[in-house]
Image 1 (cartoon, rainbow, N blue to C red):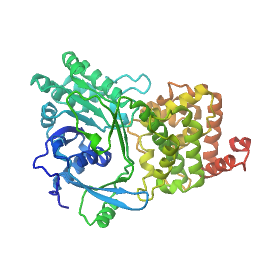
Image 2: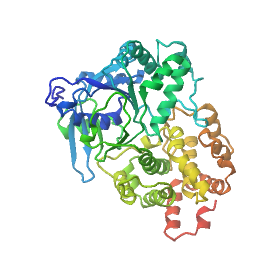
Image 3: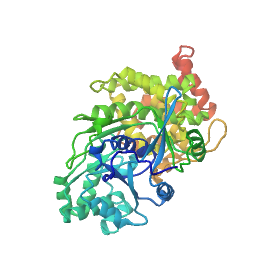
Image 4: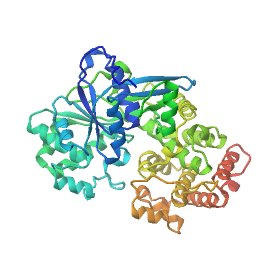
Length: 492
């Protein structure tokens, strides 16, 4: 792969954005937008300096560096036609494990105007119940006690901002690009709580000098397996060690609150608005929640690819009912958006055979996703007295997934739940199936006291264990199409 084809029409691209978390989604989304923008010579100060913080980032760091930080992005069209792009917007790549001081100094560099983040839903270290920053976390305690030897994202940002303040480098914007309701407010809570606990004077400076806009990001981006690397390189005639592929849909909506300037991303289709929350609510409640709803039942039935699961009439009806019946009453359409068209587009995106996303990716880290994607809608449905059938089925399937780790065909699997605590795991493995409803992610809504939900959940737990997920989904389809009574469907 030729990493020297920059094609930006200007000699020097300087990083004005420092991005923490250089994963596939960042490289398919934010880096893609910036790459398009850098073809405009007036925007040459908005390159990206990527930052990786984890030991596990070694592979991506070394491989990207071996390609002069360039890589290919294959955009998979719903019409079956793919487009390959060379992406060159990441101009520097720092790895905190090998040189932490360089990361701190880069944050302090006055040329950096924006710190953007993709650190996952669980990465903000907020208590699932109180939404308070967890100062007792062992790694956080290390950073509080050793400000110049950080290991967490909070410690690195604080150390960099401290140097920036000392050198009169001016303020900047911290821009969360993670799938969280009000992600800017969440980021502000997490970073300011940490910084105040570590350095009250720096906390006052941050209050005046740092902004935290909300944003909404959207582009389905699967993991890239070794087989995908071979496939993509053969398809594109490349020798890229770290290619990325994604769907053709892309969206980025950002609150226009940048204290030190921003790239003119509106030139490449990014929407700036004073009201991100309606877009956030729509996307998280429909796309992300539907992904969670699809994930565990599909995986337990034996599907490993999202498009294959969407070819199952029962699963497609299950998802469509969730969107139309359960979620839509609680999702006001953002200005200029057709909600019915948006839902139809989502179903088409899920079924995109060229993307063929992994169901396992959607299953991962459910303990962090449920409070963000599912619980808010569930709370609204409980308050409105709505039917809870689909969400009870989801919770029962999540329990089975965590507890038994085996699908309908007897195929065992590993789970990826980095934020699952010992206390929660004890409830997962309890012989009393009611205990699962006491998981920390549910404690704000007291599911154990909701009789309709408990009855349906208990029925579905029993049916999955005795008949299998596939039979339960078939029965759901028969019930919804009038071939099975509700009584027979819900019977144990």
